[in-house]
Image 1 (cartoon, rainbow, N blue to C red):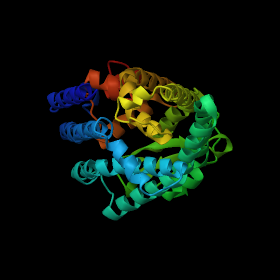
Image 2 (cartoon, one colour; image 1 turned 30 degrees about the vertical axis):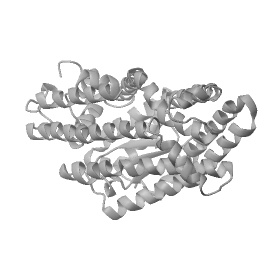
Image 3 (tube, rainbow, N blue to C red; image 1 turned 180 degrees about the horizontal axis):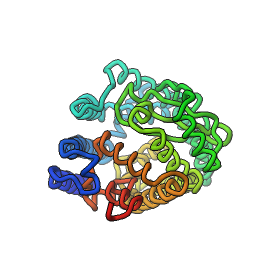
Length: 400
């Protein structure tokens, strides 16, 4: 897997550098040569950091499994003389903390090196540290009880423990999605209602045309951390909320924001969000079933450095190794996501002006320094959105 991912990254770097000095014709009037070359350099710089991440992650996987690191961590926690469930929770949380610390240098390099060099980072060291502490606290407060419940089910609910664990995971995921807009997101960002004016009028118009009712339209202070712009929908039922980054509002005209929201509403009206949720829970079902089967085969765990598997060691090892087995399915996942993006674009073109969406996308590609010339292999394996040129041509026609 590591070799394939490094190869894909190398192909992407080669592709963006090869086309660095030539702006694709459909973008020539909106994106300058200097902006295009900046996007190529920015993409390559991020990929360079990403390749270091890949090597570190692969090395850590080997150290924790075949190198006996996970067993060593387990023995260290055993010295605290905790109850079996508490032992498991502490071991798994310590593993998460360890992986976070290992990834810290490259994350700092990415944030205060690459992002800052290209003018995107607005994160201060204090804010970075505060975010890290809040995220860690949330992991303990929310993840700790969930881990404890799953470990308890693994120990006490018989052969079908994996089914009950999957049901618990599903309820947890739905609960987090439901409470996220009101209780979790405000821990990291400030939100204010969108003020009356042409933009709010445009938002109300597109919501009315698309038959969408929201609890509110909020503006988020995304500019505290980055100059990248975005918009998203969150919540369920009566608690659905539209969130606009303040950086997005600064760059786009009301009609362009209207078209972008029509695209996002397309995901909602075309049931993409529900389908993705169902697919994620179905994938989790398969994962828990596989873990339930693997739990009856100790030799599977012994092969990965856990000779005497406990419930928490099995869970930890499974979480570490599963991404390796999921990697071959990345092109299918990416294809499904890109298909949904095309469908949402068509929905937006039917409920707003296609030209406004195309113009908004070009501005976002330019201002976010997104590459216009991705490698086809890399895109197939890694991109959740269609390539810029293909997406714009689908909206405006191949001759634009």
